[in-house]
Length: 180
Picture 1 (cartoon, rainbow, N blue to C red):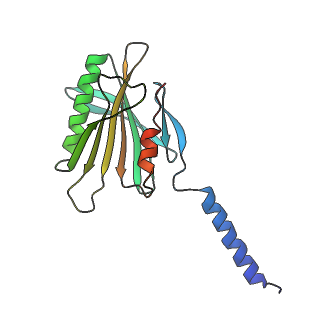
Picture 2 (picture 1 turned 90 degrees about the vertical axis):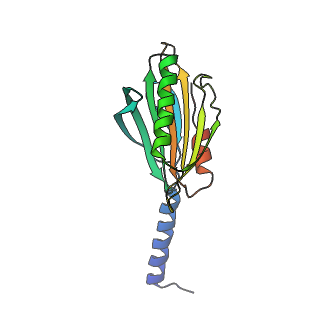
Picture 3 (picture 1 turned 120 degrees about the horizontal axis):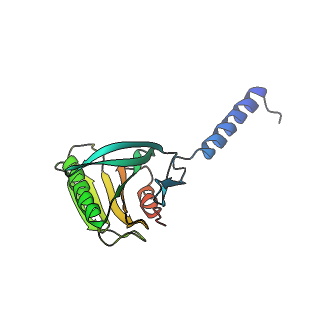
């Protein structure tokens, strides 16, 4: 049975669209180096990068960020470098407090976390928050640090803001963080 030219071109257009969709998944995971500290993050899209000063306690700290949006959520990594363990502990404590303060009256759960090769002090910490406002985006945050050979301490905040369209996306993101 011969096919009509209109049917053939419609079928070809549909097939081409299906192939293009298959080549551009919602979560296109890639390894991304974060700063010069050696952390490799697994992000679901090509990240944008930025730097800004973040007030941590009485100090203004330079923080480098890499992040992107995919599947209805934002995935981001922030990095700062402390001069030593005492400063790292103080900065992470201030970072925790600032984040909790931004979340206001959200329902929050904090728990110790595990990141391979992270320092024990300051210890990795996980925060899961669900804002009370209807329709507000949930937040998942992981803070961790790693001592560097030069005596400095690399500090990190990994964040998922929103509810990804894939139930496995947050897990993939957090488990994909690799320290050298």
